[in-house]
Image 1 (cartoon, rainbow, N blue to C red):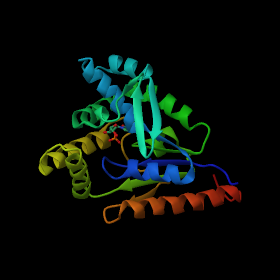
Image 2: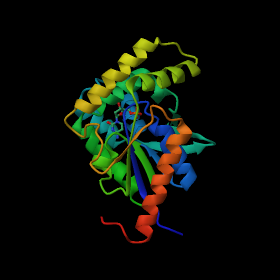
Image 3: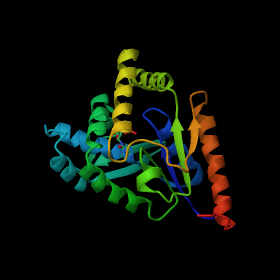
Length: 233
Ligand code: DC
């Protein structure tokens, strides 16, 4: 009953897009693709192998041969590279910064773009990242740009770090997040920005539940439009 749509969720680090995208995918019975995990995986492999992660040829070759698999383990999305579980390793701060660096390399983006489009080809998918609505899936029926103030995002990231049993001062977390934002927004290829037809959801004052409900109601609305054929696209 009803068409399966494609949902693109973009936004800066710690805006809650991963958590929201996951919950929306589960509620709708859709697949979920975490494109940030792909960039993080390329960076992790580069760092583990002691490569220069700003070397475009080497990083693109890692991206082209990336053997990545996503599987649900209860509510946890596990990420594996070949047979190595990297769910936790890719969340390290150094890997996040590395991901932001490799993601500015055009050949790396091109390699991952093809794979991301393949993963969304069947529809019924929620994909999150920085350029999903603008570049990867410009025809997605629903595009959401999930934002939040830097201070609030830093607070969320800091809490997550403390929960993992690690300690990093709040100011350091905030400044690293800011550096990554600037790099992601300022790069020439596929910079972080809302698509023209994206719905901007500011989650600064929202709970996760509220943000999820907002996206679910937007999805319902879009499905109705697609089902009744009233879609102007
Ligand atoms: O969402 P995240 O923190 O896991 O993403 C890690 C980095 O990957 C982020 O700093 C920018 C990059 N990225 C990107 O450039 N394009 C995407 N679609 C997803 C992530």
